View 1 (tube, rainbow, N blue to C red):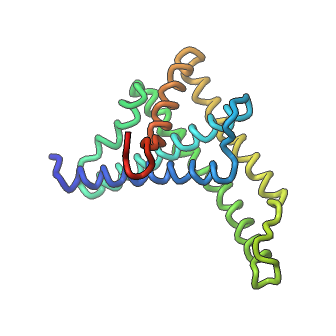
View 2 (cartoon, helix red, strand yellow):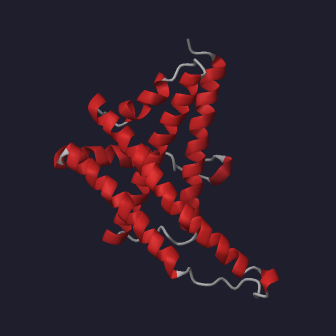
Length: 196
């Protein structure tokens, strides 16, 4: 039975994930990682970001569903959310859940390495270490290599999905993924105060 508290928790959780996705895009825009011009490279970068968001979101929903099930609370909404939203068969939904779990583990491994490099660079270049404030060094080559590894990992998972779905079905699926992920980034006209 759905209770107001359960529904409220689910809405809060989904809102939290959407906020995280929006924050990620905002940071990327601020860092110049989302160029305005359309190009093959830009489209590829956006595709990598969309599938990274999708696969991590699927993983998060399933983890939250497991948590709810462990508490004896309804979990079917979270378990079927992406199946319904992306018009998936049960078989394809199951495949995506498996891929999402593996993907998240693989990406977390790369991200932990990157975080260690970033923390080391912050210590090395902090003002108290004698570095002039505002001087930001170029990212170390190791960090660039990890970004390449991350991109290649994401590309390989996209390819696995495409191979499993077939070219025609994948093309339709990709349109649904684009709509789903980008729906979380709609900014109201007129700024934060609402408007037209």
